[in-house]
Image 1 (cartoon, chains in turn cyan, green):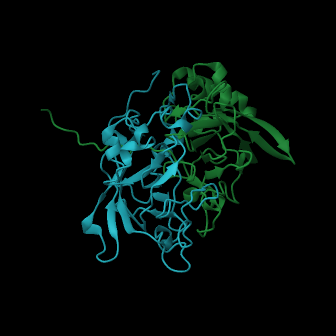
Image 2 (cartoon, chains in turn cyan, red):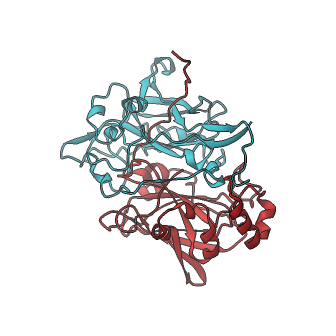
Image 3 (tube, chains in turn blue, brown):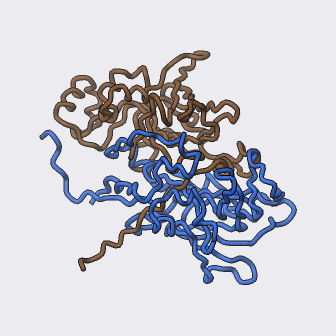
Length: 240
Length: 230
């Protein structure tokens, strides 16, 4: 068996481009249908990252920007595996995260929310999955914050997650939410996803077994990338 | 009840949001945290081929530049080989073929330096008619491509995310000065509307002796760029 194409993306579980309740999507959504490509080498390959690209401290958001003590907030561990749709681990892939601080404020020149910047919190991290596809970060739980969609719109607490996989066709950015957050069903960005089970899959679960006693609570978040077909038989060539 | 298949389902996409820079380009968000940010050097110092610059705007449905967009590019080297175990061979030391670029927050202009890629041999099968055409026009390609593979014209693969974009958009950039290869390219020819094919062709000019390719991406409206489901 030889690896072949990645499974077709099930676009019915992903948000469509145009989602009017999330207002910014209206002017930024293509109106024509996507043109479906049979994957070529351009789509089944993608960038490869190694441990020379990053530093060990990069996955510790409690320490990677702090200069005068730890950041304020609820100390948490976020951990899980990157898998494909066949349940196989995706080892050696780059996972990048970014988030607001415990007060819901981002360290970004464009964020003007009145909650204060935390001098000891940068808000980004990155790591590379191990041979079992496993990854982990340490951070503080981000706060909810208001945003201008409707006048009274609030984002549930969330961490942005970027994953590469092995192929450009597996590239994915998503957001991690936290179990029990009452803002989730009210969020127009969450609700761009038409499939309730796909929303559930974005909610990290409290993982008491992985907590560090007297130190940090833990949440588990597995990420699933597209799986890949195998060539079982050589197919007849078109045109022959 | 028949047996169950037990496939997992892909994690759903969510917008990268307005603060994507914090995670993927923190210097642009206004702070210095990592030893090195990734994606700044696409080709590396040893890459063969023509050094080029690629620039453009991403334009929304109102005709305004999208100033908080982030683009990633994935490309082959000048010999048409990707820096990947399945990329078709070895690449120059330091050639990654992947880049990440954000815009000027005031103007929305983005740009990066790289090398021009070569034609790429895809995995897709080709018909005998295309094979004959390739054999006549590019006898050198047929040596590398076994006869079941038609070459693709030189191209850059783009992935575009931003606030308001719910799932990353994939497109390709082709080169104006490769008109002959573009005319035979299997992906360009898949686009039924000839008028829309032009949205993928970057315009070439020279600035200080360096070729600059202009590639404006229109998310919506007249001349909406062709986006692909890959």
